[in-house]
Length: 484
Image 1 (cartoon, rainbow, N blue to C red):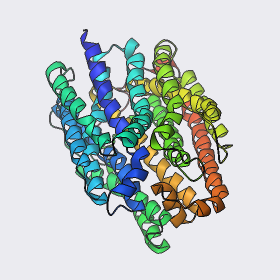
Image 2: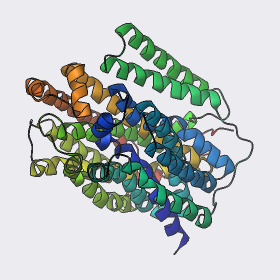
Image 3: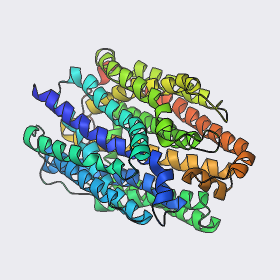
Image 4: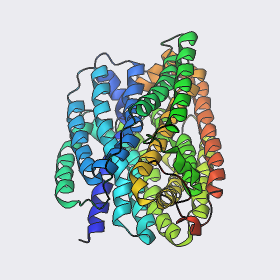
């Protein structure tokens, strides 16, 4: 097999596993809540969001580590950590324990996400990167969606612990495969430093804001405490931005945003993630909630159209962008996704699989059309020595957008439905009589979430259009000052 295809197959498996575990747990949360002792509603949210948060927090620094010590070496190490984290999750005895082991998984996923795009970019020529990154990007988003089906099937037939068992044999084989077959093509850069303060302030700022949102939404803390947490988080994040401009080896090399394609692509990818990040989160609890009452497996099957349409359009859009550039096709993808979300704002208390096909196909198709050309545009805009950190920055913005999308969605739903009733919906223990009284507020809150998603996707069109033409992909980088 030609080496570039070895790279693509292994990295696609890695990103598929890491992204699959973002949602394979989501479909199982009601079952976990019933069967795992001492698991509260707040625990459920952080079992889900903690994985993504730790991935976002360390991803960029892991990208810089890979520039210093080798992308293949740290990518392989990430596979091993992810596999070990999966084994630990399967042994959890209480809710907080599962949260901690999910954080271990998130560290492994960060190594995989931060290096896969850079390893692919190193192995493929520029005129083939869009297609290659498209296939890899499809694995990321399709894994997140197909995780719902696989998680539902495993939970329904074997039990929730099986969603972690499945990663262990695959992870072991893939780790050995990466170790023996991947080659280091990047130029190792000596003398760099890790931005510890930047990493801590970035993670602390996001963590405090998310903690404030979830504590308020679950009724765990009062308004004064919540406002203090959110204000503190915002203040720390502003410090992070100020600090990143002052040091030689920043976590986020903000000077890269002077490259027009890089800046436009990353703003668009963040807004896209902010818009689409909550779609499966909300639909899972709608489908298993008080009106539909589907089991985990059937609920997962309802979401298959997203995965199939995304898998079809992702590689095709990457191939088209290699020939004609990213601006037009990414914009089309955002419009298609926004149309699907707009249709979901009309969702009724009861729906059929056939009713869901059109909006979900539009959402999945739009994701596939947008993702790979946008990713290729970002990676092609960067000088080769910066691809590790650039890949990490881009993946971080996706994860941050996804986290806040879920946090905002839960907050919006908590405004319409009393927290004890919302907890019953999320844990699958809602009372039938209570549910009938709250059906309309529950459905209205879902409409509000999808309207917010539509607006975010429409806003993403602006940077997508302003990114420039294909002949700007290889603009000279000596006009900007990259970190020393």
